[in-house]
Amino acid sequence: MDQLYEAAKKVLPNAYAGYSKLHVAAALKLKNGDIITGVNVENASFGLTNCAERTALFSAYTQGYRKEDIEAIVVTTNKDDIISPCGACRQVMGELMEPEAKVHLISANGKRQTLDNKELLPFAFQKEDL
Ligand code: THU
Image 1 (tube, protein in one colour):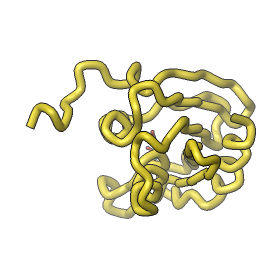
Image 2 (cartoon, helix red, strand yellow; image 1 turned 180 degrees about the vertical axis):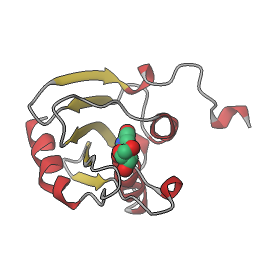
Image 3 (cartoon, protein in one colour; image 1 turned 120 degrees about the vertical axis):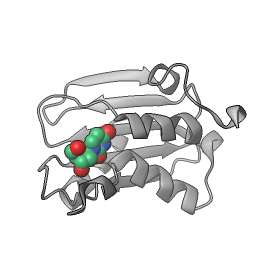
Image 4 (tube, helix red, strand yellow; image 1 turned 90 degrees about the vertical axis):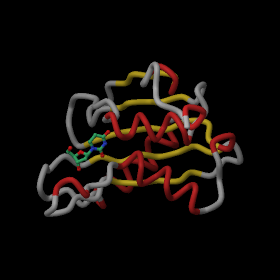
């Protein structure tokens, strides 16, 4: 997990977050040992912003990985309090990661909280509902 945290911290300066100034980085640990990172990318049209978690997940899927390949995600920021994934990210994480995948939330000063992905969005809308 420390290796994952280091990978997230390494890309944190790449966050494109001039509007909110909240820099967020995510790092996915794959079962094959690979790590895939993402940062938040903001836009002057604020609603078009992409969160770090979704950037990392979409990148993993672009590379051909699927939910069964993903073991854990670390989410870290430039703030001293941990942040919890937003609702949009929870919805995406619910579909693109396994229920048992670990979600590690780590603040800039090292506070940590770990949850199972399935704890983030109970009673979610799912593809089975279509
Ligand atoms: N943000 C993330 O990257 N992940 C989250 O789970 C919460 C919010 C970003 C989006 C936006 O760039 C900034 O944080 C402020 O909302």
